[in-house]
Amino acid sequence: MTQLDECRRVARRVFGIKRLQREQEAAMLAVLASRDVLVALPTGFGKSLIYQVPAMILKRPTVVVSPLIALMADQERALKARGVPVVCLHSGLSAVERRAAVARLERGGRLVVLTTPETIESKATAPLIERARPALLCVDEAHCVSEWGHDFRPSYLRLGKARARLGSPPALALTATATPRVREDIAVRMGLAKPLVLTAPPHRKNLRLAVEVVPGPQKNATLGTLIRSLQRPGIIYCATTVMVDQLANVLKRVGIPSVRYHGKLSPSERTTAQRRFMEPKGRMLMVATSAFGMGIDKPNIRSIVHYQAPGSLESYVQEAGRAGRDGQPADCVLLFDPADLEIQEHLQALSRPSVRHLISLENALAAWAEEKRRPSAATLAVSAGVPQRIAEALLVDLEEAGWIAHSKDGSIKLAVPVAAFRAGARELVAKVKTFAFEGERKLKTVAAYATTEECRSVFIRRYFGEDLPPRCGTCDRCRGSGVVVAREGAVVKRPRRRRRRSQKARGRRSVAL
Image 1 (cartoon, rainbow, N blue to C red):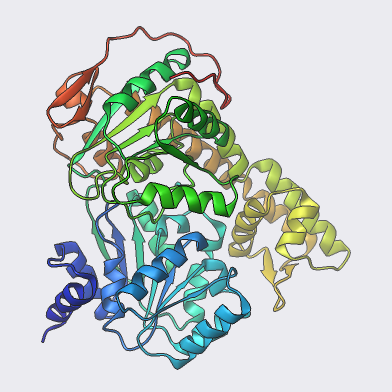
Image 2 (cartoon, rainbow, N blue to C red):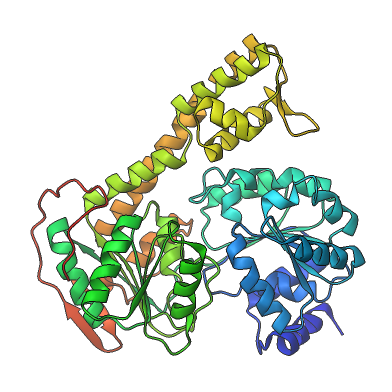
């Protein structure tokens, strides 16, 4: 039996997949041949199978790095239901759960190990994984590795070094949204050696794209019309938790079945909302921030409405791509108010390093060094008055440049004299400013997408590196300006509106549907 036959057999018998996609097969064969692979395929393409099937063939554990602990329990449960040997290793485990997971890992053999980037480099866990000699390191949501990606996470930056400590096993990087620049950065930071790169257009043909340019005072009336016309289940994405709460309350008052989801809710509230939305026959609306959706496998989502503009086209494509995973038509509508971009500018300022952050961190580190003391990253962030996530990102840059180093106990020390460190830190100012410019560019791209006169699929595919993409024939531009497709064979027409200057949006707006 050839390896391809074996992949098809496992896919059929274990996962119930009758036919694998060509790209899935190519990636699986490369993984089994111990080749590095970078996969950028649309949401709903079945990227998880690319590591799950080989994991049932490889003789040693497959380590899968994922950004969200909350998703791992669902993934573990689904794999166990199919008879796949799997354990989770992360900070949320109880002592009993951890002992059981470690014992299973130490036995070795075929095993899927679901973990986080923080866990894979922790002193307590890293040696255990190293001794297991993993056959494959899979990095899910790999765009988080890249500082140019739309969801950059500092903990992902260190995965290249973590891979080296594991003995440099073959690596599989999975993402749904990565421009050529981000793909190149992923390959460099992960240390991928001549990887097989598999890509496909990020926009699926069954997704009908539309944009309504709507000034703030008119947005809620437009949303009300959409809710009454679009099929459900569906998701309404908002940029802020305030707007999620407001819209959810209004939907409840008017009797539309809905739930809400954002990071400020308690874990039990989020779990309950997700469970209600995921009911197979439910026609629920989920009102959520971008915190909802990653790893959610609900094939029959019929509509995605972005009530406020996202922070990047990558984010929009990923979130819109959660609709229509069953291959049936689905509608993705952006309600665009230019003033909403101010909200995203504010959110970017909170999440990205700034020159002020860099200088504060530089001063704090120099002060610690002059006192001949070595802080942890968390302690340094507090003393510098810089959010820990931003401090960690800057520390990675400083370490890569050779200005600082980590001691064996994890504390931070200067690798050069204080004066040289200060001069070196200032060299990063240009890079930090570039990140700010990149954030502005992403917002301008969102605005350009919203106001383009060309096919929206063409716009998206060109942005992701395709030279001559074909028209989709189904978006509002292809069908005619001012038209949003609601159901197969039905349309909702909108009157043309004259644009006028919008009031400044701060995430709060009176809501009346």
